[in-house]
Amino acid sequence: MKTLEARCAAAGLKMTGQRKTILKTLESSEDHPSVENVYERAKVLDPSISIATVYRTLSLLEEMDLIIKREFKESFARYDTNTDHHHHMIDLETGEVIEFKNEELENLKIRIARELGYELLDHRLDLYGRKIRAPKQ
Image (cartoon, rainbow, N blue to C red; front, top):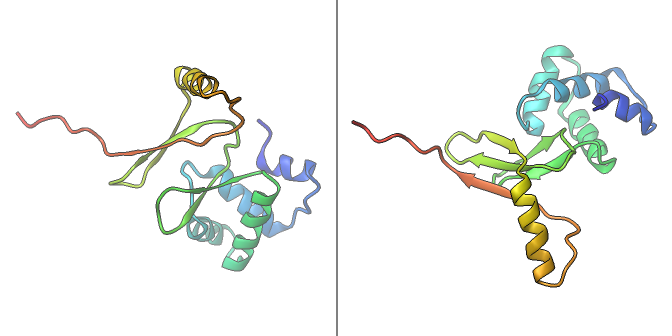
């Protein structure tokens, strides 16, 4: 997959220093960061970045389909740089978001749509749970 910066350049987005910092922050994130997370991390690299610049840049990247805004039953949105088809498991205790793919699930969704007389065009699946703890012995 091309880097986010290369995808932005290919889409014709002007690459300012602050945008490059925000892109670097997104690409180095191992989670699905919120606006505030991106801002805090980018501020370490460039103290002149404002929260407004982060909001505008994330909004622009979302409009260009370069990132995906995710709403996981929280009071804030998170951003996903993985635009390939995948699903999420959200840990309700820790807030951790785990990406996954499952071929059996993909086939089942298509079969269900066909059985209902539809061609599946799009969908979203977010699973919510908590880790199963081993019983105390």
